Length: 268
Image 1 (tube, rainbow, N blue to C red):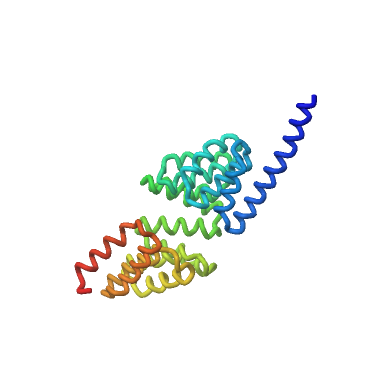
Image 2: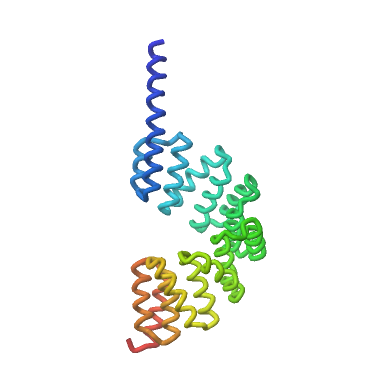
């Protein structure tokens, strides 16, 4: 009896303590201190506690540690049976380049929540990466049907249209988004790309500059502006932007190729 009493007391102390640690880690995440939150959860030995593991998976997703996130999500999603969990698993897969598994995860999420508009948008992107164009577009349209005013869903569809070379339609979708919200650099980027591929360089430059004013740390804005400068024969400006691409994304290959072309075709 004495041993059982001490065991019960130990459990009563342990579980509130772990709950406090999870709460503290969640607060750290909310305040942008993600690495500290991960350290706190791992040092607490939170494996086996579903809430702690779920938070740890989210933290791994935040920090682009996708294999670690996938390992936890594949364990806990069948237990939680949550559409959010499967959606986050799908995001972990798609950002890891594992597109078929991403499709499966997003489909499971939608089975659990058929009106989840973002899930259809995410599924559309996974289908696009697999080259399944018709499936991608149908899921984009389903997402828009469910949530026509969602700016992220509209941007995702605009990106799809740009990749399909339907540039005017892409602008028709994306211009209202930036008119309603002046902080969406990704929409500015793809409006700029749509103009660029139609050789509307002045308009493209306006939108690349707007995107950089919003987010001066996004490498693709510099890359596409570098392409634009190259097309205009402004090689020095193009190379300056490529330096920023290299700084922000050192392992990229696009910048290397463009630099070689510029050096070959110019006297710089």
